[in-house]
Length: 193
Image (cartoon, rainbow, N blue to C red):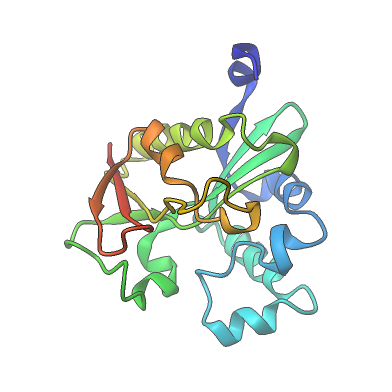
């Protein structure tokens, strides 16, 4: 990708006004298996139930319609090419139940538990640009601590379907630092704005 491409890349929070871009990016399968980025926000039974009859899509739409933080889109021209779930840690109930990624302190944290890049734009550095956009947005909003839980692959090539939590190297390139290694292959990383 050229520098000109990255100059044209817009990074903005998901709202009612750009919901169409989100739907376009996630497509008819809701990114993967009708997830619609609700995996971390619902109990396992609610999530499974939401995979049918468009339930998870509807749940995400309700979050957006209520004006609650959902995530950040990367948009180039008339196409969304990337997504990072981004909201206060407590909005992601799966994190509250995690044995591996327990809070390490009592700071107010916003989490990035999921990243999705359009298949035609993977391996071009879009995730790094998206993460830098999240950091810039967070700084403007007064969000002090950004946290994520990416993977450090144990094989040469990680299948795309396993990269939805983000790759550590992308977070590292965006300036995030490891703050907890309870899981050797799923470190907790942070960026302090």
